[in-house]
Length: 221
Image 1 (cartoon, rainbow, N blue to C red):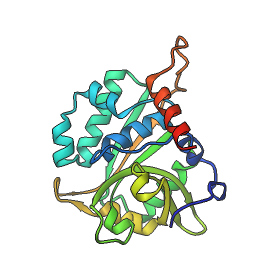
Image 2 (cartoon, rainbow, N blue to C red):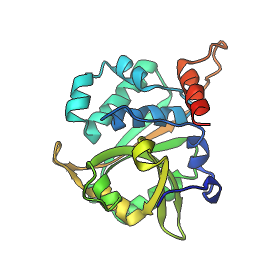
Image 3 (cartoon, rainbow, N blue to C red):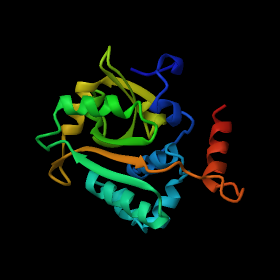
């Protein structure tokens, strides 16, 4: 279900995420999700910066993609290189403790907390109930409605999936439990938590990511 009217969504995590818009380069949803997440937390970041700071081999990302664990390692490396005050944890959904009920509790708490952002790794065929889609994908958790039990995703590839879309949380959970054949483990989520308020003002120099975001927003009206 696509979302045409953002006013219908409660403004929690979505309130900070919708201030920014990302479009993944081809086969690069993982690194795009990382840049999107850090930017949503207040640390303006571009996809190019992730590649540069972590020395991530571009060819391997484009050819083979990245597993949840590899994406976590890239996040952690970026945090260390940039000395960001951000904590990180990863959850594979094949852990016995990561039940649907545990996921719902996590989501309910997450969408009300502006200090954390959840990167979800899921199978698009399951999430969209479309067997013709590619498979593994990374995007951000944006919102959750406990009354309808629908989860809202902020997608890294809005040209293909639209910027925000909804699906039942049980279906999204199943899409995260799906096993990644590259790692032989379930998919899951990465949680980034800001430890202190990001200071982006610095010395008044405009961050290149802010220039890119301003350009992107102006192009999209």
